[in-house]
Length: 461
Image (tube, rainbow, N blue to C red):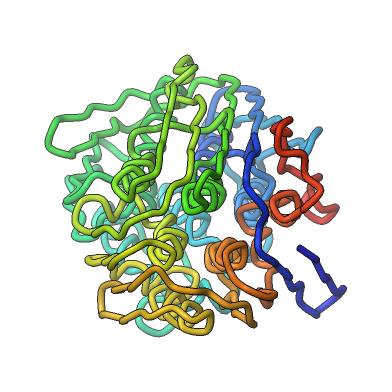
């Protein structure tokens, strides 16, 4: 693998060749979803919180810098460590608009946070984020009493928010979204009474676990309802963020799809709303072992070990989809390498991510020689495909870029992933790990441990 980067406004390319036998032990950077939520709730707490394992990717750093703009002191002594000085839910008006970059999580969670403030704020994003729908979070926050205006066409950013006196509501979400749930629970901290979110399908539960860890009282029933009680201040506590299973997914699929491939991932988050990927790989025939080693901080963590076999196609649909939304691009690549047909349905949410991921996956798989049919809500992929290298687009989407870098490990010739800068959104150091996977000199027997976290870029510190 060769990395070619250019300065200023030019883009970075990843150049990938077929991988030798995989036999590696790795760690991955901190969980992106947890990092966003941990720093926000720590900022609302009543004292100093040290967050270790924080993901210093561009998306999470937009959340950090937004909180700084709202008057929160946050120190960054090490690449993956933050010290957050909570201000007991007291925020100050920002001096300028808040830039969320390409991070939908930042914008939607901040919308909930700012809905309970007495001042006006404006959230902006880059071109990609400015195309993403925000009505799903605007509608319930308005029901709580917030004044939110989407300045873009069809309820898209920028968002202008004037918070105020909020009242708790019972909201049944029509779209399974952990971001919407998180926004409403954060707003609920500032609301009178209780705020209940009723999910049609179970989504990631990091917000409620993080609230519980910081000793905020919530309630949950067995029917998918989660309630937060208003007027609470989180208790300051230190927290260690586990490795991100959505980042590990790329390497797990690579090992699973290579007969006799072997991968061990340590210190990885094993929250049961995030491990559906492992079930899919088992269904496709891979040998998968997971072991939880620590649950002290509510977010379970441990190890995952995968041994590769010739995979077989599967069907992904229904309740699995919300818990696989970030893994579907790399699972589509797994489908192209598997024997038989892989079908992904009821995944129309992929159309409104960083890019239209359904269209992007279909386009790139075809470029590499796979047979794929695109549907309104998913994909039908026929394998096993004999992949060949070529130029594939990232579509400025970090998960598309990484998924097709992994596809390049199984392709003849050289695969060039264009505009790969977007990988920094969620996985700093990805290209260094990729280089180890493609290094023909790698010692197979010693199973080297590969770290994957580089230092934060100066402008992010």
